[in-house]
Image 1 (cartoon, rainbow, N blue to C red):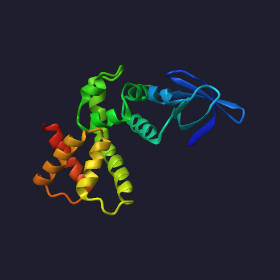
Image 2: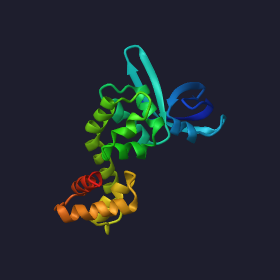
Image 3: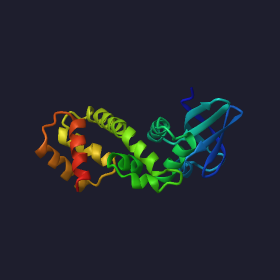
Length: 200
């Protein structure tokens, strides 16, 4: 329903922000990451929005960038993960760290967040791995289309770097994936490379 709000930041805290737009003050719940990126009171601010509606409850959630909002919406699709817990996850780890934990099958990274148990962490990883990978690969393919000289290896390497892997680890995994499998698509090569990162 709402794409974003642009207006004056009236006040903020680590979990909330109030933005006045055309004389109307909107109350947002925000992650720690978004809170840290907010300017001081009185400054102009733009928040990407997600309106959560359930029975008689309506809440606005604000995000500093589209990646965080997309991940929030993906987390909401998991059984047992409500908006407050999704926001806590985004506050406990950076978007890149959450993506890496999901793709590298590291539930212990998520369990360290208050409110996330072992079963919830396992569900998040099981249900979001493919969806996170597609988001990353599609984003990389979109950028690669602007540079026709990019190779399959380069595209897969960049996708792993985007997921938070070091350059050396990503390069080693992609090269091993090319040696052990015949991949013609970026997504296939990234999947195979991720198998090698989990085995080492």
